[in-house]
Amino acid sequence: MPITISSSDDADAFQILLDRQSALDIGAFVVGGTDLSPGIAIPSDGDLRIDHALQGFFFTCGPDHVRHPEPIEGDAEGRLFPLHGSLCGTPVGRTEMAGPDDVPGCFAETSVALADGGKALFSRRWAISGDASEVTLSDRVTNTGQTAFAPMLMYHMNIGGWLCGEKTLVSGAMLPDGAMPWRFGQGDSAHLCLPAAETAVDDWARLSLGPFEALGERSLQVRFRVDTLPFLQMWRCQRGNADVVSIEPVSHRIAGRAALAEAGELPLLHPGETIDYALAFQVG
Image (cartoon, rainbow, N blue to C red; front, top):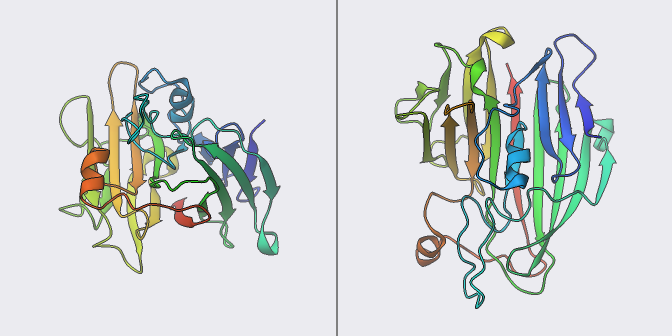
């Protein structure tokens, strides 16, 4: 059974349903009775972990790899990092409800077996702000193995494309013109990746997707820490039965691991060291 956290008992309240079987990602985000997640209207890459996670509103790539499979550096057997990394589909080890001052939320720890044989502890806290308007996320990755690894992370926030209308835009300071149509790019599928750190305010980048008629012309508003998530990636797919658009704060630009390493963009996390990530969202 998922863990459910609600902002209030009002008819216009929101709920998040947390997935115990996948690192406490969000299976559904329900606002005033409308679920923003795409459900089964997604494309499949043939990885059942990702097919399950992509149906939900929020899932996490990492902590050792993001995007498509690539060879593990120096591995004599020619093994690959799995699609979107090792975390997705990993059950949580323990959970604690609420938080400081009884703020609605949940804390979880998940032990992750990394693809290269290392280990990491993924500590996650979801909370609802004191005014019950915003969902906040704080994540920490700790290297609990015996060898260093290069941490990578990407959050997928998946929204059903049928919720978008002619007035729906993506808006944010990192966009070249400050806004663009939600159905950006050419054809039935497209993606982009933009630097977000340069236009951030107080080390947080902000963007919105909306308005949505089903949410009373309100928008999904997202902010994320750019010290460890310096890029905004976005993806959409309206191919066949698929209809999804995704907001994806990410730690690395789109490039192969070899190119990132050569450019010095794969710094190592040594045993015992930690790295933190944070994100928040609301409908308003």
